[in-house]
Length: 264
Image (cartoon, rainbow, N blue to C red):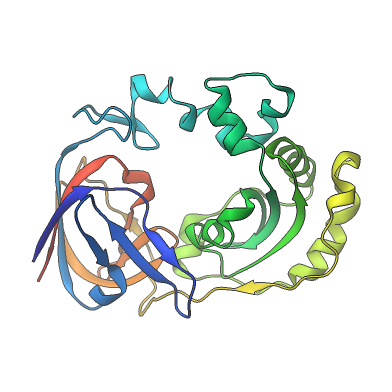
């Protein structure tokens, strides 16, 4: 069977293990059902997630011109401390920014390759943790807007990482941590503006991924250099497909590419 569509990040369902879905315009694939199956991925063309044109993807699924224009790619997406909607100040589109920034946000600790701090909208818990390949996570602060979450993250990352090592995460070369203890150690560094939003009583969320074989030396598939690839699917973690030959394919970083996926 052959599927064709533009790649967007896999949708997930929190269960044990996580259920993964690759969603196209007129179809979807439950990726868990493809484990142990031989599948091929072939690059067809580009399709910018904003303008829909066949133009090389620059970042985040957008062509270069759209990336520097659409509010979905503004700096505050990556750096929430730059959010200004709470002040009524527009960056690219104030209505969109109010919708996205002026809602409850979570500052969290997640363990993907090591303990890291991050920010997400409350509505994206636990999806954000799953997308990062975290096997355990905990909320530490719940604030009413993105700006407060951003300044809290900036303060805490002086004392804990804000990055994930994707190779370590995929190799499953990880150590369980007591995230409640981490939360307690870090609370003194929360900015004064956010101290009242500290979450004092909660427990870790544990996440199980559908992986039959972890790669020892993961090698990333680049469809620009290798437009046709075939392999046996052995796992799904974060937004990665993991293959038997240790090839890994990051769906998220290939958003905006139209591909053929053939299941054999």
